[in-house]
Image 1 (tube, rainbow, N blue to C red):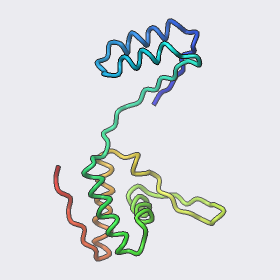
Image 2 (image 1 turned 180 degrees about the vertical axis):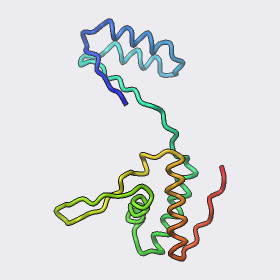
Image 3 (image 1 turned 180 degrees about the horizontal axis):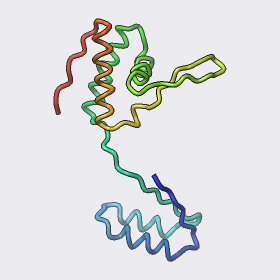
Image 4 (image 1 turned 90 degrees about the vertical axis):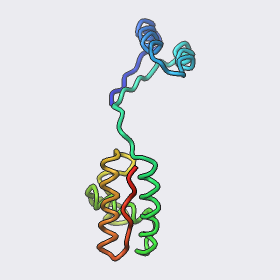
Length: 140
């Protein structure tokens, strides 16, 4: 991700940005044009790659079965979620005032469909190891 600022007095850059954005086929063109005319502190432009997000179906499946598995394990859904994240993506131990805490190296919100599928696979395998059957996900 790259971010840069355009200062309010830099009319040429603001006009260049306005011309570029005006050429896009976006229903918010009017909103963007209005924003560019009133920039007392300048503009911050952020450019980042689009990532393929996890699907809603994946999320519903994971939440449903991780909640049921958490109940089976005597854990809260959040506790189990953190445990599965640590198993799927690795963890680090952090020293806090409450003692050593284990934290996952990656959060589920930072995953794409493929990585979220890995988390689902870890849920299924871990549950099976503990005698809890999680059905295979249905294909989209």
